[in-house]
Image (cartoon, rainbow, N blue to C red; front, side):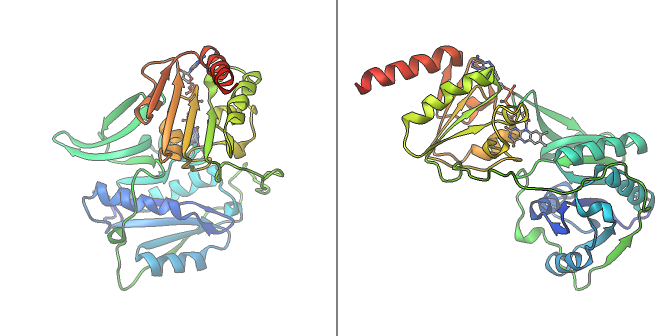
Length: 332
Ligand SMILES: Cc1cc2nc3c(=O)[nH]c(=O)nc-3n(C[C@H](O)[C@H](O)[C@H](O)COP(=O)(O)OP(=O)(O)OC[C@H]3O[C@@H](n4cnc5c(N)ncnc54)[C@H](O)[C@@H]3O)c2cc1C
C-alpha cells in the first residue's frame, strides 16, 4: 500500500500542443484490470503549457482526479521534464504503480525515472493476469516471437502499456460527483531537451488508407534497391500502395507516411502482403484487420505468420522474382 494512502496508481495522459491524446485514456482500462474492476485511487496526470481547461473537460467527462502539470516545455512531449514530474509525484504520493502509454519518449522517461528512484520498470505490457504467485504482466519479446510473462516482485512499479492492448469501456470511467484538479509545480529550468515545433511532412499525399491492396516491405528486403521489386508487385494490382515497417522508414528507404503500425497508420485493405516483416506487436496492431494477409518470410517461426491467411516460407529475393515471372507469363 502507498504510504500516503491517497493514490494507488498514477497514469500519465499524453498531450501535444495542449491537446489530450485520447488513446492514452486506455491506461484507465489497464488500471481497472490490475485492481480487478476498480479505478478508485487512480490519479490522471496531464502535462501541458496551459492545460487546466482541458483537465476540467476531462475531469467532467471521466470523473477521475487529475493533476495538471503546467510548464512551457510541456507544449510538446518532453522526456526530461517527464522524468522530473514523475520524481515529484513519486515523492508526493508514493503510488504502487506509474503507467504510461508505450511510446519511445515515454519509454525513455520511465526507464530513467525507475533507475533514479529504484522502481521495477516493465515496458510494452499487453496483458495482465492474477496468478497464484502474484500479479503477472505479459509482453512480446524478440519481435513478437516469444511472450515474456513477468511476475511483479517489487512494491512499486513503473510501466508502459501498448496502445490498443486494453480497450476502454464505458464502465472503466469512475464517475464521482466531485473531481479534483491539482496543480503540480515543476522548476522552470530543468530540461536540456527543447523541441521547437512539430511539422507535418511536406509530402502528405498518401494512398495507404484508401488502397485495396497494400504491399508492405520490411527490413527483410535487405537493401533499398530491393524496393523496386516490391513496387513491381504493387503495379500488378489496381488501387494498390506500398507500405512499410518502421525500420524501413527509420533507414530512410521510404518516407514515414508509408509506415504501418501503432506509430504509423492503421489499415484494413482487401489484401495485405507483408514482405520480409517479422510481425512485431507494434506492426501487427496496424494491419491485423486486413481482409486477407499474405506473409513472405524465410523464418518458418516468424510471428507475422500467426495473423496470416497464406504463408510463404522463402527468401524474398527468390520468391518475388519467381512470383513476378509467373504472373507476367500467365498474363500473356
Ligand atoms: C514504441 C514503439 C512503436 C513502434 N511502432 C512501430 C510501427 O508503427 N510499425 C512498425 O512496423 N514497427 C514499429 N515499432 C518497431 C517494432 O517493434 C519492430 O522493431 C519492427 O516492426 C520490425 O520491423 P521488421 O519486421 O521490418 O524488421 P525485423 O524485425 O528485423 O524483421 C525482419 C524479418 O525479415 C525476415 N527476413 C530477413 N531476410 C529475409 C529474406 N531475405 N527473405 C525473407 N525474409 C527475410 C526475418 O526473418 C525477419 O522476420 C515500434 C517500436 C516501438 C518500441
